[in-house]
Image (cartoon, rainbow, N blue to C red):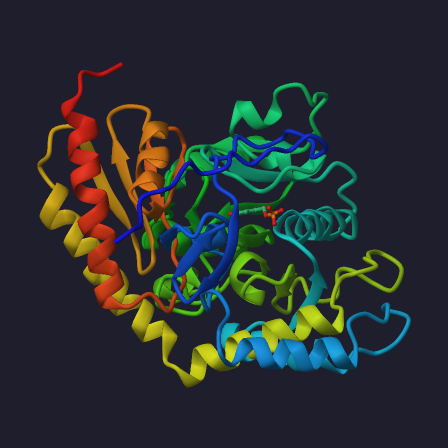
Length: 405
Ligand SMILES: *Cc1c(COP(=O)(O)O)cnc(C)c1O
């Protein structure tokens, strides 16, 4: 499938701050679920910019819409009304059943706004030290507050003192949440990813989500579901919690909403929609016309092309293919996830698979050390899903056949 790499020039970065462990690949352009590097090598993209490129690369209807928007208006500031904000907000409310939206630029910003809402929700009720229940395995971002809400000690290391006011409990353990509410009377919100992404593709169970909804109603708490990664159609519903037939009070979104253009949003139900008042929160870039147009067009194209049903169908085919090839292989612990958000947990650190897959022409990621994560564009075809399996399964088998390091 790939032309042999002819002495690829190793990309160098003398001036970019070295905050990432990057593969020695520099990408040049893309089309659909395929990307090419600067040496002309082609890769099947099963990472989708980490669940960002909902419509793949260079989508034939998104590109002209964004070109038109760039030529018209990129940014104005929130001193003025931005009609596209209302258009995208109305659509997000229609799809979620919630009522108001705040726009920002990224996942951590959406979560930061959610945490401000949780604190003010408590403060408005006379609670001067509001606390938020968060979960083991959680990832909410890398600002000081959102890294404090994150569980991974590697994300904390070097950045103390952490922000206070978080109570951490195990995921999918309703009794632990109930006990935390009892022992921490200042709790004002419960905050979790509907499906943990960076934590290793760990879904909150349907009964757990429904139980949290009941607890929040009974104790006047906000239920805040971080759908930054699992939302926007990835699981085959607009939002992953819709599989549990319930609603959150606060839902941060980002990654897939703009199909690659930076965007974040906090969608709120009636109990949270008017917590933030004029002057309480803001952002310079948030809700700019370019990002809003990207959001509007992404959702429109998803609807027109039936991408929810498509993601559910192709995701099921991809999972079935992986199960057919890998289930029962010693060292494969579990294959899990929903729609086009899938994880293959191995019994050992899987980081080496990343480079091997890239060598074989497949872009993936490894998260939580041992989990191979697939979060491709929602336009992935069944044939491309079969190609993912055809490249990945033999690689994983060969990797697991080696003695454990
Ligand atoms: C990626 C991610 C974030 C952080 O988003 P950024 O845009 O990188 O700040 C927060 N929450 C979840 C669930 C994520 O997957």
